[in-house]
Length: 95
Image (tube, one colour):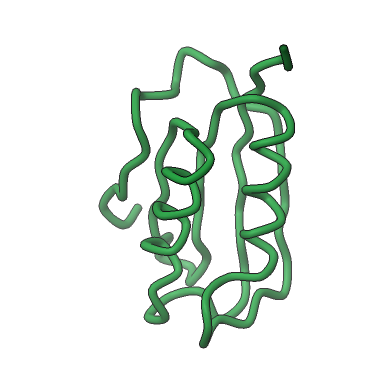
């Protein structure tokens, strides 16, 4: 059994207006991860994700690719506290 980890991700590049958040929701559902994703006013996308280490790693790889039409230039990752993770995975309003 693998360890559950929580990560905050910030994705930069052409990641708004291309279905990026919805593609991450589909990937999180496929991997049975919890968390959320939202656009940021600076043009980036932010995600908070929790789950087994290998599933979070797969999700992070998907963040680096993005959907068709996206052009990811940078993904930064930092630890996040488990108390901040809601059940399921959803899109939040822009922050």
